[in-house]
Image (spheres, rainbow, N blue to C red):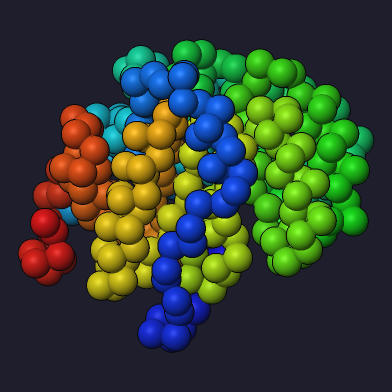
Length: 304
């Protein structure tokens, strides 16, 4: 993920913002609705040849990467569908490799979000919804990522598109244009719409765009896209801060957490995911199974 990449990490203030008032209001509404939380941690892709011998066993063929990935994680942020819709037999094959506790979280097609820009995209949307439906009970939250040139002037397009989606379809929305966060009126309007429609607001934690780290929860679900910097020491401090915040959110009734680990080249995503899962288990009393790193060359002092 290149979005938010910076060269000088030392110049970035990685402080995690306080909870937004929208989040505080949500927790008030959830006080009497606590349930056992569902927690998913995963990566953005499985097709990494450079994971062979480090995360995948030596000799693993590329065709078997997903087969091994689903034994190590309980979720995947499926960016592949952003670029193309795969045939239904392929989707069913992928789903068949995972157990019932695994969740695929596909990204909406770029034709819908970046070419059609949410307008006149009924045909493409129907095709996407039909395709992902074949994940069956292993379909998690699908997500819409709008480009950084999709400004508040297009709010009506978001409104109409989200309204037209099936109400029982689990969806999240990622905003990137700076004005969605700098313009208080536009911000209030779009996040209130998401709350009204039960659409989860994606939180993105990346070095060069601290505004998209908004801490607004519009549903009892958190969908966090975390972008690390190649196992830089700040990656681990940021994870520690997130674990504390997530612990607080779970204590206040958060139902579901998706936490997807990105790196700019994705090489070290399994290591950082392992650190995240170990820290969540320790702080929150969870029993998530961490991935097994075959060849872990990261400094041992970083892993607590």
